[in-house]
Image 1: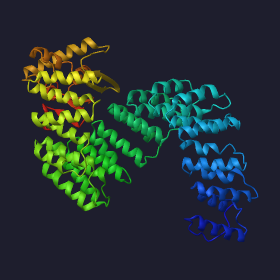
Image 2 (image 1 turned 135 degrees about the horizontal axis):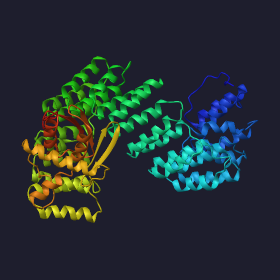
Image 3 (image 1 turned 90 degrees about the vertical axis):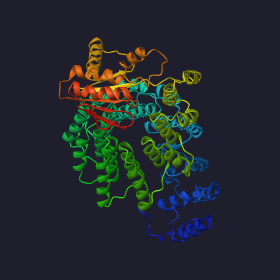
Image 4 (image 1 turned 90 degrees about the horizontal axis):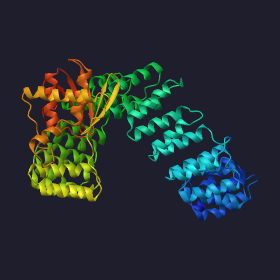
Length: 599
């Protein structure tokens, strides 16, 4: 029932509320639910207003829980708890819809109190209340309490698909994906939300192949398809670097008639960009009926990480011509494009232009891009000046960019000073220690290298192993540096040795400058053979033919030795090899790389 017409007046004080209330009393409207809820909503914001609220309700002819329930979801937990106390003091018994309105945002102490109230009111057997309590415990990081409630407090009458899905989603959000999968496999029934909870949980945990496995299981169930599941599957393909699987999911979306909204379209464009096929990303982008800012940013960023600076900047200007104003993400992408191609003058220009014309206040990441731009170009003094002139203290990302540049350009003094500082700021990141050790090793300072290693041991920091993923005929295989575990282990290792022998005949000379160990040169060269990228490429050579394209995704930056070796492999074995490392893409073809050896 709609509220009778009363000219609304702004209520900012208890005095104004009392005036409005008296007007409603004169008109005989004070008991109307809509007006009563408005008065209660204001009074609930401040404990000082609760006595007046109690008097208001005492004179209400029918103080039903429906007066209160709509208010709880919109109030902060502390105010909701105060309003609930008032409700109980009348006394007015809550109904099944009361506590589920409060639980989602309840901090742990309040959630525990509400749990006790549920038991007292015998509402714990009501599915809506039970599921809200499960969600509250998960939201407070207490998977143990949620699990205890789920196992011990639930009955077959209470546990429904929402209960199971709440547990699966909550465990995934807390990082317990294996426990979530065990529950998921035991679900008596699943809906689309259940499937998406497990798929997205794996994606957030970085377990992309597991996410795709669950997605494949879902496809055979015949469930109605939707954009949320599709977006999660596309992101999984992106993370795995699985282009063929990404194409398959994209076709599935088109054949299913799923509406390609901006979020899904952006995910597809991002997938093609990050799986190494900018051309396919461009076709999807061009086919969008409307392009939002996120779509423009995604395509500009994709061109940037592929080193296609000119095209990225041209697209930025096209965006301007279509009256789409850039944001801080656009600025990052344009600066990244300039950094990956050494376009220092362009980087300077677009930093000033976008900041001044569009009133974008530079953030930490923008200064980090400028440090990266100057650092990659060897302009270390200018990079350091950016840091010195920043209006805020540099974070680990900004200092890390300068540190990496010092390693590339072998500036030992500045690099060592920054390196120790970076390690103290990011003590659990193994990459920082390895970079400093590499810098010191390049100067033959093995005693200091040992000191870095000792510090890693003392802090229980393990070096992150290099991993490379290659997709061949929709089969995704992962290789790890230093180990080879594969059914075709012997064949892969034989191909790797033959591969290195053949490029050696073409002039390849091992670059051992990044090998840490103070051992004989021959041992250093042998260790290079076990780099994950070389093992992945050797596997790819066994499964492909001349003229084919191989796509490899690495978790670390490509080392100099692998970069030079892959250039020659592309020529000797007549393959195009696309490598996506931590920072960018490298397209190897005919003995050259798209980065022009600038990375």
